Structure formats: C-alpha cells, structure tokens
Length: 448
Image: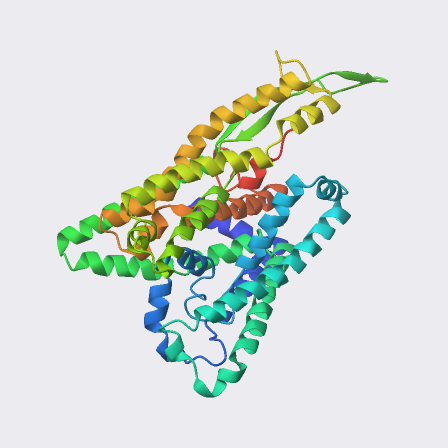
C-alpha cells in the first residue's frame, strides 16, 4: 500500500504527466456532460421505456454501449464516435487492399495526414447516413410519443445537423486527448462510455441477488471473483506474444563494431484485437432484419439471433469470431514484409534462410498461435451469453466478456504503459516490481 501511495505521488509530481491527466479528465467530463443533453424536439421525460428497450436490442445495444448510453437517451451525442470508427476501419482495410493508398501511407507523416483527412471527410458522409437512419428510428413506438408536436416541421433537418456536429465534436475531443492528454483519445472515449454503465449494472445485479437473502449475496461475491478471473485471463490474451529469436550480422566500420545483437521478433497471439468480435456482432444482427418482414420464419430467426444466450446463437457466433480472426489477421499481418525488413537490416532467424523461407517460417508460426488466440477470443465473445444462462442480469453480463471487456482491458493497459514510460524516463520505479506493463501497441512493434 505504501508503494502504491508513493507511486501516485511520483505520478503527480511529474508536471507534464499531471497536466496530461488533468486535460484528459477535463475532456472526458465534457463528453459525459454532452451525453445527457437530449436532442431538440424530444421530451426527455417520455423516453425511459424506449431507452431501456433500445439498450437491449442487438447491434443497437452495441452502439449504445459505445456511446455510453447516449444512443438510447436520444442525446445530441447519440451517434458518438461510431461513425469515425466505421470510417477508420474502412480506410484501414482500403490501405491494406489498395496499393496507391499503401504508397501514400509509406510517405511518412505527410501520408498519414492525408489519410487522416480523408477519414474525417468519410466520417461526415457516414454520419449523415447514420443520422438519417437514427431520425427514422426515433419515429418508432416509444420515441414517437416523446416528440414535441410543435417542433415536428424542423425535427428532421435539425436532428441531422445536431447529430453530425455532435459526432464531429466527439472526434475532435478524441484528437485533442491524443495530442494533449493521455492515451488514445478514441479508445478513451469508448472506454469511458462502457465504464459509465458499470456502477448501475453492479447495483442492479446486487439488488437482484439481495432478494434471495444470504445465499444471493454469496452468489454475487462469486460472480465478482469470476469476473476478476476473466479479466486476468483477458490480460494474458492481450499481452500474449510468441518471441522469435533474431540475430543481426556484425559490421565493422573503422574501429567500431555494429550489429551482432540478439533480439526478438514478437508475434501477438491476438493480433486482430477486438475487430473479429465487432464484425461478428454486425453480421449476426443482419438476420434479425427478417423480423421486420411478414415471412413466417421471422419469429424463429429473430428468436435465435436476438437472444445472446441462445445455444445456436453462441455456436454460430463463436465460429464467425474464429473465422474473422484468421481473416483480419491475414489482412493486417504481412510476413513477407517482415522478411524483407529483416533482410534489409542484416537480420536473420537462426536456422532459417533469408527471403521467402523466412516469410514462410513466420507465417507458419503465426498460424499456429492464431488458432488458440481465436478460440479464446470466441470464448470471450460468448461468455456474456453463458452469464445470462446462469441468471446474471443482462446489463451486468455484458461485462463478463465480449467487446466491452476486451476494449476496457486493452485501453487500460495502453494507458498504464504510457504512465509507466513517463515514470521510467525520470528515474522513478515503474508500476510493477517484476517487468514492465505492456500495452497492445508495445508488443506490435517489431524489434528490428
């Protein structure tokens, strides 16, 4: 405890780090304040039932999670950071698939600025489309009764303008946190939105178990212990790497020797991150669209794909997560490029010839470690369904796995790694006695 207090004092004594923390907290408070401002033309006192229903509804519930409850509350920041994330994912995939964009990205800082600017333009387009769909969603039962009749003629245009401005404002907050604050701005905003729902979910779960008496309290404590164990396992998944030894050839220039060092090439067990779960959730939501038709099979399909605790849903979902993990890893992981970079820097893997044999060797190892990573990621994805089957409330069950927990763990590790870097730069002890805190970004950088 004494070491923890001393570490906090060390963190606060570093002026630059203290300013970054204060700026980050300030921007986060501004964002959370904005999520409670309701759109013009809507009576906030009449949307409680519709809001609770929206937060439980498939992909809409995912949007509401990322928006910190602003989506279901019809806030001016209802779309949150999701349009920017969609645009960023699209640009990331296009950068991998389109050679011209790859060349622009390799131009350095100027190339990244161009791609970031195009991402902002695409964000505006995506936001306009999503804002139009959200206005149509607000015409559904529950929200329709909350619309103020006198404001109806202006509601469509004003809502699209306000929602677009709100998303751009959240995107600006994320960039400011990135520049002047601590951690990745976009990830911090998503994490804050997820964490904002945790206290209420814990209170609901505690109240539900308290009705059972002493036995219910014991079950609640067991659930908390299981949640901590899952978080520990998820930390292992996020930080897990396979280190491939790499040697560098010695070079003698004048009287000095360069190279000859033995380093490691770290390959992540879960290099795809949270993307497979997001893709799988989006695809799994599509069959529920049949429920809006008059087909006789609508009820059966909707029952399977809208109930996350359904056995068929969990099986199909797990298979899709595993498939998307291999697909996304194949898109972002390029063993041939790694082989060329090693060769260019006079590096080689002991016992493996440079060039294509090195690329094949790295690719084979990546395939071997991706399989257990994909299976574990699929298990994380379906854990909330198992939690619901074990009589955990729906709000609290979402924290037992899935997108929410994976994002929270990854972002917290990244932030702690940045804090520890500041401490070590100023000769202070790190956050841990043994080893250093490693974020997701630390292990993705090769050692060459």
